[in-house]
Image (tube, rainbow, N blue to C red; front, side, top):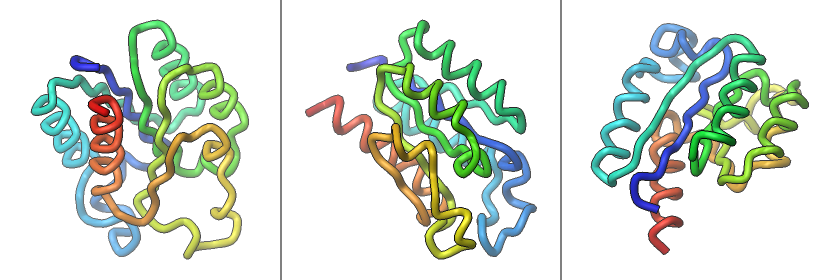
Length: 148
């Protein structure tokens, strides 16, 4: 699967990374995370497209587009939509490629409402609590699975 396309979706408030609750989410910015992903993907002959939105519909539209544009996989940090969005789950269920759910913090050590994920019902893998390294681990897993 060389030249594979991966869509990376960042949900609401992730545009504030680096300044919002750094004790939970770290000091890296969203640009830092995306640049690391672009670099890793390019090194492996892959392409990453990243999108952050505070709007559920924009994320759903991106998932719908990925069904038709040759995207092989989606890495998604749905943020607060994790716990509320059946619509994102439905969109992901219509996508045939791999889906990996990523969370910067360990959601299971946080408030009880964060323990449930609609997205996990579709995800092929879930990574939580590794900070920004979780995104790179997700991309690495996709690359290794494609080479297997």
